[in-house]
Structure formats: structure tokens, C-alpha cells
Length: 109
Image (cartoon, rainbow, N blue to C red; front, top):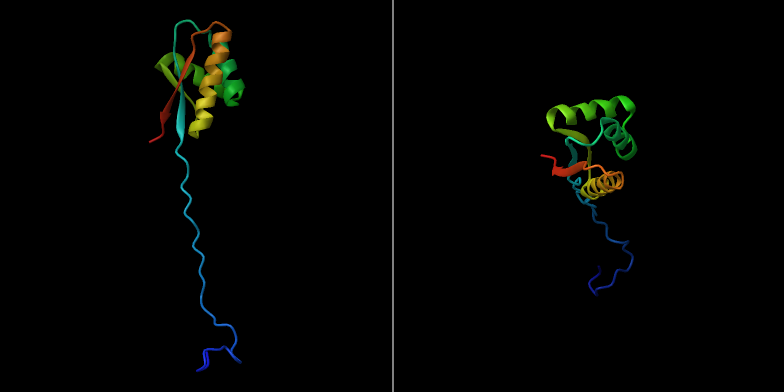
């Protein structure tokens, strides 16, 4: 600026402008766990794993045997909303088919 406060003959002032990227935090993941019961047929469990968790026949059968032998099996990891929806859909489907199949959600550590 000149003495009189004007910008005569001077170009725009230059300064370094830096943009900081906001750090986005990855959403927490939740395990969808299927619990064993003594009434739901194994074939129904395999069908549920294929239909609701997009497992192929081999993976669905492996998870079904984990549920059967260990009392619990991991169906997948999802964001909270997706996990909650999957659990609700599975349990509604099981109830409609008169099976007591249960799934739960557990936060991934």
C-alpha cells in the first residue's frame, strides 16, 4: 500500500493458503453373531447365511458348523446400522418360519 492507503500499482498481495483436510474417522464395526439353539435346522441356518449375509454354500456351511459346535458363529462385520438391520431381518425371517434362531451384535475391538 502507498502512504495514502491505496493499492496503486501494486498487485494483489500473495499469501500461502493451506487447506487442511478434515480427518475422517472410520465408523466402528460390529460383529453379527449367530447363536446356537436346539431347534433350528442346520439347512435353515445355511439358507439364512446365504440369503442375508451373501455367503456361498461352503462358507455358510462352515459358519453353521461353528454355530452348532461352538454355540456361536461370526456372520460378518458391518457398521452399526447395517448390523442392526441384518439382525432384525434374520430374526423376523426365522420367526415367520417358526424357528427360534437368534443373532446378536457385538462391537469389534
